[in-house]
Length: 227
Image 1 (cartoon, rainbow, N blue to C red):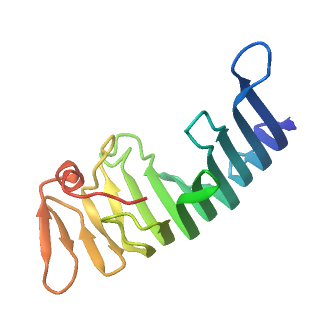
Image 2: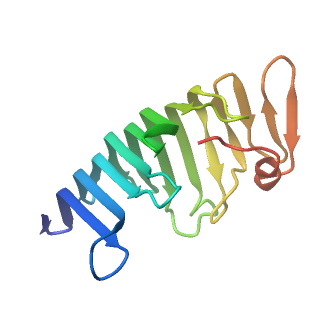
């Protein structure tokens, strides 16, 4: 269902869809089956918007000879994103608040062999874009703040990945130059670690252990995010 009123578009979908693949035109042997079920929505307006997902997508690959049946599930539980947009004489600010849980599971021969769950709680991402006045050197600059929590868990645990809560707190916005992908200033705290952006980027993980990186590429090259 989709409706359009002026510049506002709203869409909703309630679905229970099966797609099956067979070995040949006799339809005697099913190879795979995909199943999408749930309720999804998207509302996009000028000053606000929202999206939601509650349901599951699964892909079943049926047993072939000595190869057992495999099922992969993607589950969306109460996933929501709410956006508000505000403007003033010199900037536009988009704020998104995200909540909900996403799970990936894999079963082989009826037994669960892997599961990863990510739970997001009040993750607020606010981006202010400078739009004026015309000719100002700051036009195009972006100021971003992120606050909230992300919980992750793996079964079995993945080597090098720590389960638990990641709490992000920002009291000083990250500032991006116009067209830039790496912050030129600002700070964010992730649990007990503090990242101070600039040249260089400083990462303080506590206990007097501070690391320095020339830029975002150098920091990304020496680390990994398990999510």
